[in-house]
Length: 369
Image (cartoon, rainbow, N blue to C red; front, side):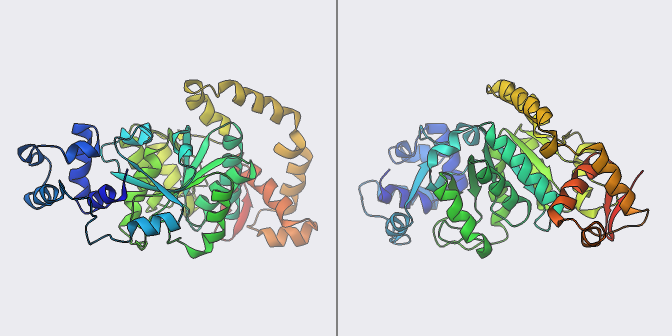
């Protein structure tokens, strides 16, 4: 698509544009349509603009620098109706009329799983998200998330750790990385063959109202959405609702009923989301449709043979639980008490929490047995 036509698109009502593209099949046909037909989708103002542009090759004055900015960013664009536009996203009720992409746009057509959750996640939640993403990416899924801090970052990094595919959907323009702390992560995603994706024009700031719009793209691109650590009012619950409305599978990792950061996930499970504690649970439900079932079985077999790294040994379980006593204790306190590294203690505590043997409270971890 030429930039003059793209610029004209961006000056129109996006909602009307989507309706027209869905009805006609392509953006080019909109500019060839009869004036009376245009009135079916566009306001009188937009219809007049289209009429004025019919014979013009010049872009509207509003976006004279769009071509230069996109070229400087090394970005490409996909328009609803294009053959390369992601088919799963095109199916949702309100797909974006245009996607701006930095990186490998073909990754948007891979089978994708979205992983979302709290920005202020716990250490164990971060690790769970990273581990899920790593294993799912190793099976061939593209991991999609929103480039936020916390669970989103863990999901992207898990996919990168597996040398897999990951896409970050942004709530701002491609040239406005938000949060700024994730600039390095955004570069890693591009360098690893992933993609940054947005529907917002270059230079667009991360306005609060952008993020619910971003969430519908995260879920719309994906076959299923996994929620890890979400409070009762978390934006991740909006993603889960959007996913259900779009006909996507919704999965949630359970948490302690005493932990506020797990209240949202527990609520989703109560409302019908699929409870998962291992990536294989998701693949068993999604994988057979896309040929991943055998890979999941191989992964399960590998895990059974590698119990030293993937499972907590009974001696380790009893050793750590005995050290905890019956009062809440922090990871730092356990490290000092047991003279072990925090990563080792956290790994065991995470497994124990998933097995229901300990719970995480506001004052630390507490044993349940």
